[in-house]
Image 1 (cartoon, rainbow, N blue to C red):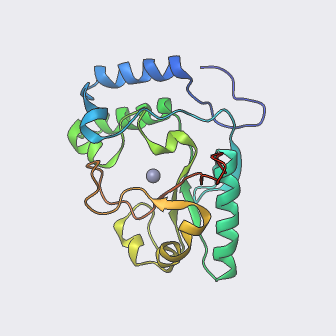
Image 2: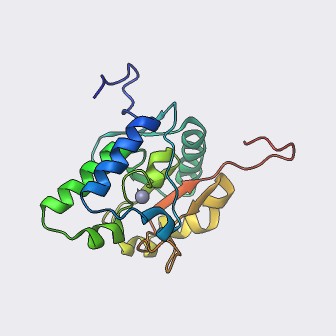
Amino acid sequence: MTAIPPDGAPERCGTLARREVVAAARAIGVSTDYGSARGLRLVREPAHLACIGLDIHQRRQWLAPAAARAFLRMRSAAADDGIELQVVSAFRSATYQLGIIRRKLERGQAMAEILAVSAAPGYSEHHSGRAVDLTCPGFPALEEAFEHSPAFAWLGKHAEGFGFRLSYPRDNPHGIAYEPWHWCWHARRRPNGSRA
Ligand SMILES: [Zn+2]
């Protein structure tokens, strides 16, 4: 492990570190065809991260700069409509994801059970710095009940306008459980082909 970068942003995995993490994940039971079977690709981690403030546990959270700007605009627009969007988590590295999986195994969960709700290390959208898990006051974090919240209704109407989309709707082709709280920012293509 190297030192925490001076801006306090969490560490990211480069290509080599990611390869090691994927190998370690296979060694503890992630199948070698995980990516192709789920239609998921290895996710590159961003060179830069920008802080988007504190999450519900008072930890600083981070997104890639363009996603962070879009998120802060969206959160402020929601606030103007009386909706408080609270962050549960945002960027996490493949190394961090491996730690999550290991802890779940230690607690006695089976790998198949774990991979129904967590992406395998290296394959989580959270590695991209574009995905954010959201909640709002009065709703427990990371539970399906969030779909009945005013925040979810607001996101359904407005998130797309800020570039955010629900990644795992019901019955998604990736075999990942329905996650009404998980939103991912997608760069828009400009007419000249560059990415916004
Ligand atoms: Zn998520």
